[in-house]
Length: 411
Image (cartoon, rainbow, N blue to C red; front, side, top):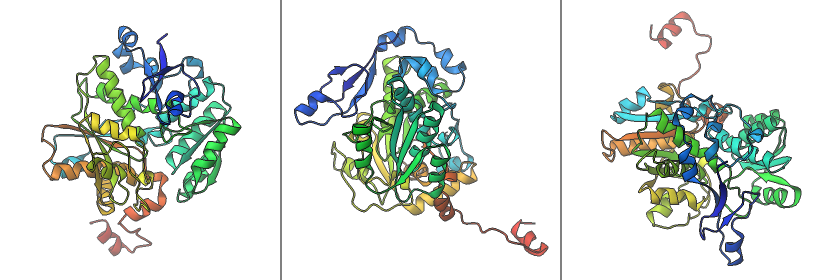
């Protein structure tokens, strides 16, 4: 069995795998708040690595189990997450002028977002550690995914939703059998459930207290898939949406691990993408800060990335990979959403931001014509009906006569 442990991201002290939701206790005693993350015996993984199994095993992130924190495969929960397409989109190629612009389409996961990777790992670890109840905080996608995986595992689930989360997402959460709670101050209640009532937090590495080191490990599998789908090639640039910053850090960590395993020889540049109306990472990056600032009263159509602040791990991924934090306007997000849709992919606004940032960089001549670029579309527009209504421009054709129909259908 591959040795796995929790390691403090600041002082590097090691701990056994367990329910450590308050970060490193040694650092905390010194007044320092620091998350812990899962680290593996990479020499042992490398000795037994079989890349052909990664290519041929059934669709599930558990084909990468030696690089995931679960010890007993009997506790693994899967709904067939992962194995999502890496495709070129006709309209984006035309708009960008780039030869190698790809979209990693995470809308093809079981609940139509990349959160399924996180929750496959989180809920599995909850089972392995003996928890019967899970909880999370969400703008929508995370809550739906947590509810689905909790249902698959037979666990109780409570989801605290942003007040602007669509009714559709509340309905899905409840349809899976979870409790859906709408309120603004979600962290306080989530913390109470975890500390006092035995709930497992399906959350990211930060903010502390009450974070989890496990779910982020699911995001790493995106990197493994990309390299396999590109026949061993490494992208030059990765464009990903950032809110808490856990997704971009997980993807970065995946490439870092592949380099440690000698599967790849370099790490892509990571570009964290936000909306102009909510851009704490951009402001922090431009000021060369190591901690993410706070944006008061953020405003953007992209609710999934409308967080006032985020985790420092996302900035670490950007700095360590020689990347950058970028932003785009809401009108540009809406325009790019139309381009994606006319190429066959219906994405929610937050998922459009990385594509819009990549197109903006291409138009400015900042991307070389031969660079290999991958943008992450992390969630579907179908779960955001109010935002979708704002992005659709064509009217419904109601009860036309034939002359009106001919005009509408270009006959």
